[in-house]
Length: 325
Ligand code: UDP
Ligand code: MG
Image (cartoon, rainbow, N blue to C red; front, side, top):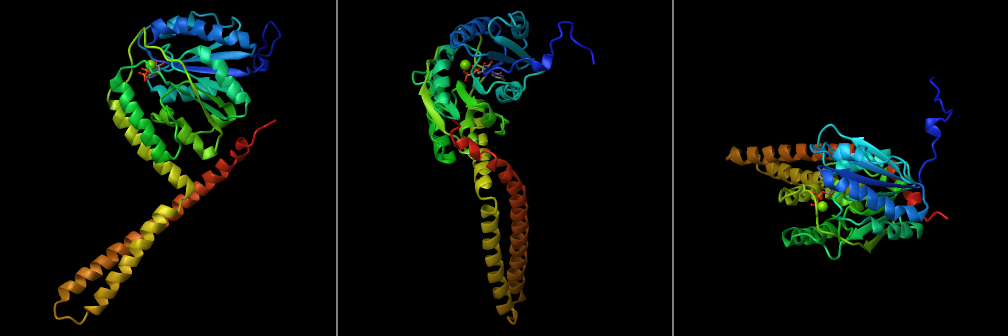
């Protein structure tokens, strides 16, 4: 094993208390001012802090600008770099996976979120909340984005049963042991509270400042509406399957089975008829629905096994809804 000249073990470096995770995609003019703003906001807190910049395959000078910043000037700066653009959720997940703090904060890298709000998030975590969500009450974006977002938030609340005013606000704080175990993919960074609801966390919402974008451009257009909709359907399925794995397919199986029996009866009753055609039709339907019933029951049983395995893993979260003193 090669030893370091200074005799320090690199693995033994004290873990920070707080990790701030920022995904960056073509944000070359924002990265420097953002670093300074975060540093200024967290230094007075006196907490060991790391900033994790995740360069999501930027094609401008974002990475070079980030790499030129001081690495250990009161706060530790760590940089992750993707070879290509994987999307905001993936970038956030990479940051979350690499973060070593007990408390994690995520935010946008375009200076629309304000790092001066971070201390208020930490206060809420200290009060015992597992997840603190920002609410951009006075949002500084064009109405063509604010309006669909209002509708989406209402819909997400209705469909997932987790009513949050502003799911799309990236400025959030988490207890690390909660967020590190929540599965996130696709564009699910907009559904973190709903996905986290699998672990029954204590969620708080606080108002945050919001600024118009000064440098660079937004990375999303109208396609976001479609993506949100698709993810919503997926999440609804995940949530209801996780809660009642057997219920859906079991019900379909039972209905199909009942109808198969009915058609079987009709087929038997028409057996003696001179017109054999009806018997064949009833019999055919009975076979078809009978197969559907057997198929759904087995599929239901299989998903039950899959989710029962997951459920055991999810019960590991139970302690999280208890406040640690
Ligand atoms: N982002 C990213 N990868 C992407 C798209 C966006 O890392 O593929 C980052 C982006 O650099 C910014 C944050 O995610 O830091 C939010 O993006 P944006 O400001 O474009 O979203 P909006 O504010 O328009 O909703
Ligand atoms: Mg933005």
